[in-house]
Amino acid sequence: MSDNLSLDPKTTAVVLIEYQNDFTSDGGALHGAVADVMDSTGMLDNTVRLVAAARAAGATIMHAPITFATGYNEISAHPYGILKGVVDGNAFVKDSWGAAIVDALAPQTGDIIVEGKRGLDTFASTNLDFILRSKGITTIVLGGFLTNCCVESTMRTGYENGYRVLTLKDCVAATSQAEARQCHHLRLPHVLDARLGRHSHRSAVVIRQ
Image 1 (cartoon, helix red, strand yellow):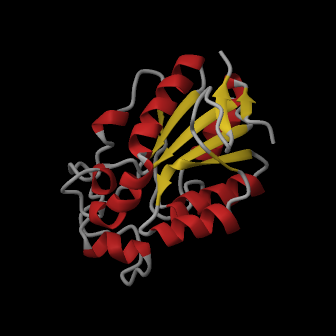
Image 2 (image 1 turned 30 degrees about the vertical axis):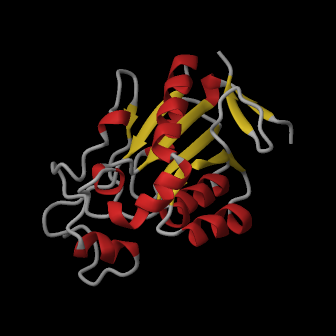
């Protein structure tokens, strides 16, 4: 693969998965679990720069928050895995500070908010696929939380649904470096850096204007 990967903004969407205060910010219910990995890659700052450049180039920016009503009645009474952590931590409760998208990535005019995310896969319970097809999107660029849960699940379904899927390794975070590395090297087939217009030993994403 060449140093730079050039994408057509007209058919590209950047899908931002769960950039919400409970993950991204000091005081967030689950921030402590991801803070070290976030700091090691600078993933939030990287994402902010990528989104600004992608938006300026005319790509579609999509935000995919996860939210629940108080009491979490939308999901099983006996959740396990990451969803158990969400419930135990009282995270992502609708209209709370923790469920809000972090200020640095607040939706702008023209951005799209994906509605209905209640589990790992962003496609499963939302209008994401409908919106992408309606807009003629063929490439999705993924960033967010958690690398080995929601990001990976969304990547797999996107691929199965026929989209070209690119995952930005310096715009994602997991609960440990080991989990992040395992995903990058073993499970995510198209993993890139979000270094727009900058050559490196890894790939850079360039969204053409």
